[in-house]
Length: 619
Image 1 (cartoon, rainbow, N blue to C red):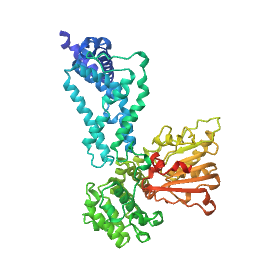
Image 2: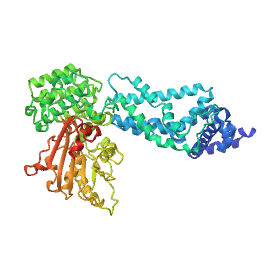
Image 3: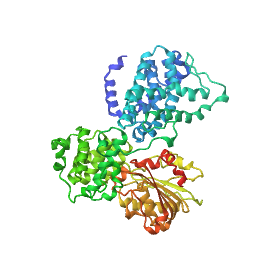
Image 4: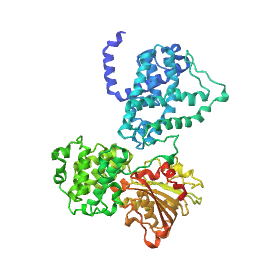
């Protein structure tokens, strides 16, 4: 039209540029209306029966606007599918890895829970996008679009499988591509349809895209099957994980961790060997600091029974410690990709056994800063704090372990980083608020669960978390209190002292009378300190508590203490805590210790660990 090139039109354009944010907002609203309208029309009439005119009318926009919003009808169906996948038009513009549900999957550090979290996303995804994909299948002519969506899904699953592989969560011999294929198959649309859609009375769409339904009496049945769908997918996915739950093998029959002693630990590639390497370098670090008593039974990992000779008053110069590696010092300090061969670390371990002296200990630590295993590199960085002292490359490795490792590596890295810089930004994101005071008039004799350092945002200790549910399902019932007790989780004595007073106040606020308390890690320190502030407990169950004499409980305020831990707890070694809880002689009868397994700090709040070691019986 002639007016399209008039000066008035140019002036109007200038005005539009001036109010660009408002125009973009209105354009986004219009686009969302069009895509939502297109979704409804496609589902009602199928692809062949839908027209741009119908979609525009449903959206209340001009036909040209509907056509241009996504380059025609095929483009609108593609946009509708992407919006359904994301859970809304606005979310479709957010990168997949930044969407909340996928963010939770990525940030979960336990492979089993990570796979369960991914499985939990699938019913929602297929429930939203499945009907549109049936419309797409019925169209027949949109093969390119269907192939493009398949490639998009496969690439996403490969990224997920690569993340599992990076965290050493795949079974030995299982490649990333094969793992992605398995996830693809287990989480296929057909499985969702079998477990949920068919049982809800739905059947696949007809050729016209119109779904058939069973009589109304069947309506809603599928909602009951959604949890079974999630559990079924989760159980099958967990077979990918090295520590995954095998539904055909009772939990108590799964093998426990075992140390690989001495130089052999550094020549093997198994998970047990990596854990043993980490235990050796952390033990060496504790001894170098002058605290060999923190290491219980060092011979179990092939170290000398007396580690006192490894101690030294002053830090060892880095150049002196790194000299036996035969690596240029600048490369040693700056090349993060440098790897020391296992044969070299095994030789250094042999030298340490032949001549147990500080320089041999420091050399072994420096070599393991270049291990192939992130877990071992992170443990070596913690040990280096005590052999040569903190430095930039050590802090960088601690940050890497604290942010990119598996759960145990992150725990070790965070403790090491907290020892160097408690206010580091990586750690500040892990600190949470205390439990709110809500008040209740109802007296309660029950059990309370709480977490340890940097775990205030974890799920396992909260209502509906896996360990909370496990304890709550024991017979006779513990009747766990809802909510659990939350404290900041910060790594400092003042933070634990503050949390102890908050626990005292919270127990009073919740009207709890001599509760049982289950406390993991330094959550046990908080509970101990709370008893010194007058809190009276029936049973105190300490899970992987890092023993420090200054944080013992007031034994007069606790009826019974159950101490549950593993040997060579790597996180406690990093924390320079003790691993044997020996009460004063006059209170020896109040403490019963149960020590099972090796290395894994979080094992003591894992249901399978409790089952394998018959721990419910000790309650």
